[in-house]
Image 1 (cartoon, protein in one colour):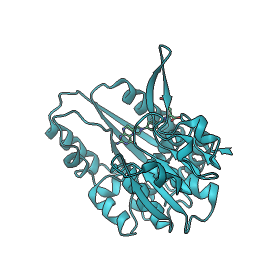
Image 2 (tube, rainbow, N blue to C red):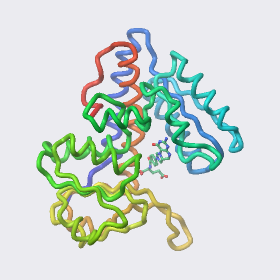
Image 3 (cartoon, helix red, strand yellow):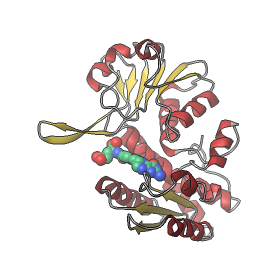
Length: 293
Ligand SMILES: Nc1nc(=O)c2c([nH]1)NC[C@@H]1CN(c3ccc(C(=O)N[C@@H](CCC(=O)O)C(=O)O)cc3)C=[N+]21
């Protein structure tokens, strides 16, 4: 069994992004990422701060916008329009979830699709589903990069994605299909989920339930990608666990991503990669190699 070191992999991706950024800057263009946070969720603030730090470390410009939780939706839409029209901004990310009085679909679909570095805009979803050039959601893109690195050609492999969210499960399935896997999207209502998982050469867990998938659901030698980031109470302290029961799954898997230190760091690295890609496309420059789907 091998542990897939997402932290090291992400550091390598960021180094390659930094090289690409330097090449673009030599032409007088600085890639810029705008991150919008509405409200004051402590976990979100930490995460947004990390994004800002890593964006600057890669040589890009970081623009952070913090709005009060009670901000009217119209004000957020106006800010997005402003960022859409700002030539210094190549990527826009609106941190989710949004406060209940806002329509997240409407907000996301207001972002210029070319600047939608999350890949959540309906245009990008449609482009991905039809195999056309798009912005690809960061978490699934990071998972795909790790899978290709580990397994080489994915063609013909059985891939099971547990979870059907718009931000992970569905785009992950599209990417695996694009690499010619036989893809099953399973979820909480799937009949005999254990048996479905046991058929997976590639098992991607993205359900958001702590340690839901035990080792006896894992086919011996399978590659397990754990997207879950669940904060649990453990002996009076909180700690992070995935959707996979790591110890029992690691005993049977061929390779597995840990939590933390697996998919999470790759998500931010891919956000930077997408921002560089968006900047290159906006300026008619060649796209970075190996950083897109
Ligand atoms: N529009 C939008 N796009 C997102 O991509 C998005 C979002 N909203 N809202 C919140 C979630 C969450 N998310 C994470 C990314 C990296 C780590 C990460 O790096 N985690 C570390 C651990 C961090 C820790 O210790 O807390 C790890 O897994 O090793 C976690 C969570 C992106 N999200």
